[in-house]
Image (cartoon, rainbow over all chains, first blue to last red; front, top):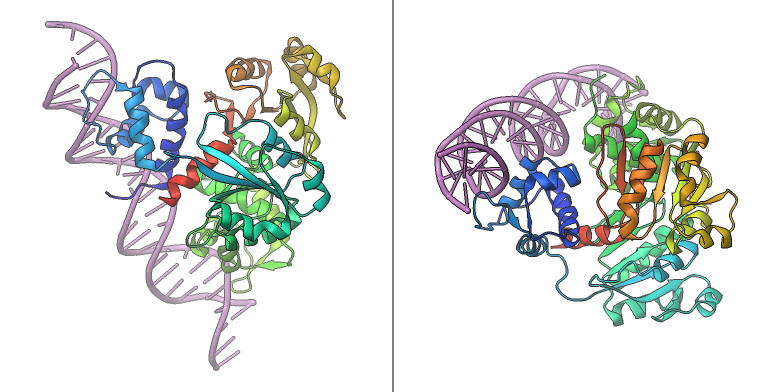
Length: 202
Length: 202
DNA sequence: TAGATTGTTAATCGATTAACAATC
DNA sequence: TAGATTGTTAATCGATTAACAATC
């Protein structure tokens, strides 16, 4: 299979999420255009790579389509283990707000540089001080980390997580974290989002 | 001036943030490549549109470069007003975690559908029940909203914010919010970020 | 049947990469 | 001078758009 473009991959990820919350049995590329803003042309093109082999003119079976997209993208079929690195205001909120409910991502550990923080908080999963990062991440086979430490600790924390075996980081800090061969970083920053809005408004 | 591509705009937004935290006086496209992963070629190409008119071989003046990027992108020069719509666990954390400290974005109001929620919480800015959205947003001239309500209320809330004059929405929910002529939406979702990581790892 | 919609090809458009003269 | 780095052009590569036959 030829490789997917970055833009196409991101569209499909977004569409998988959109379809997982879609209420009808069938969906058309036109309906998707109206709800998401992606042109129906590009949507059909993206879907054509899935080799659905369906009919011609009656739209897509929403469930089958979702399954095909998830398979093509390699989205989780079984539970995937995550940790939260940094248990400040934001990290604690992520851990408590049930954001992973109904997904296959599961938080299995939390870390903080401050020993008292890990002792004061409690959660449905164990919390550890920073000196346990290496042993816990490798023992629990944690794949993903949500990086929510203070900016100044971001790179040091990321480095330790990566050395311990984490392969994907969702970066909530404002620090740039370098990617490497097998480690990917997604930046989820409120300030970057607002800056992007400003730039698009111009 | 010819219009910027979507990809170039996002790179520049990211680079502006990177440069704002850069500690040296001068910076080269190669150093940027190493820290951010963008190729030095594409970085130089992006910068060339700024018309810096600097020297040839001694890198860029980091401060001048940052100023030129911010001007080109239309990033804030003066304070810009934001509100938080939805004061659940995540919304409250955003409001408390000082994420806008040192930026020109300022939270000036919070909204929630639950009257008791706006009465119980307190903040450095006023909190209002949902029936005040329209009047407060227009009176305070709020430009941006952080959408952090429960998924099922996301579209209704977004619609009311837009009707009241909000022009940019940072969407923390999992619901797709349609953009329109003058209203832009940026999705900042932990689950989308993890899905994108999975898709890239494949 | 008429209208709607898909899947796919061809055409267009645009972005990235490679390369290198200029010059610090 | 030698090495490094910019700014820019040309070449390549890839994505999007337009269009339409197939067919539900």
